[in-house]
Length: 171
Image (tube, rainbow, N blue to C red; front, side, top):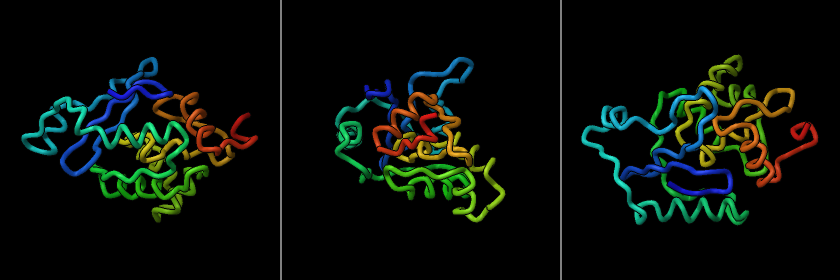
């Protein structure tokens, strides 16, 4: 567990890199956001979850630097697990520069599915690495804030930290 300025975050890593970064707090009616260990075991036979401050050290240091406004890109390895479409969407999110935003339509076009903005929204919803795979940088086509697993207040805080809030987004 990592305590951040936007609340507690659950982190998990494999030997290949960060595999989960989830908001610990849940919105009313939202299911748990921690990965079900049985699901992880089905993906990687023999995987077990264990606390290790040492193993999380690099991730925690870079997240601390990000929240202090001293880091714009994460350099640690990622272990992204998803469908080909999800992976394409998540890579497009990683390509959004710090301090900028894109619409769901922009991401849909970037992954070659111009009309697939709803599918992009679902891929964002399944993003296993909040903040690091920056789905908070995705906004509605009219420029307003919309949907975020950590809540719109957290999305606003992250965009404010990155200097990406415009008058439209603030409204």
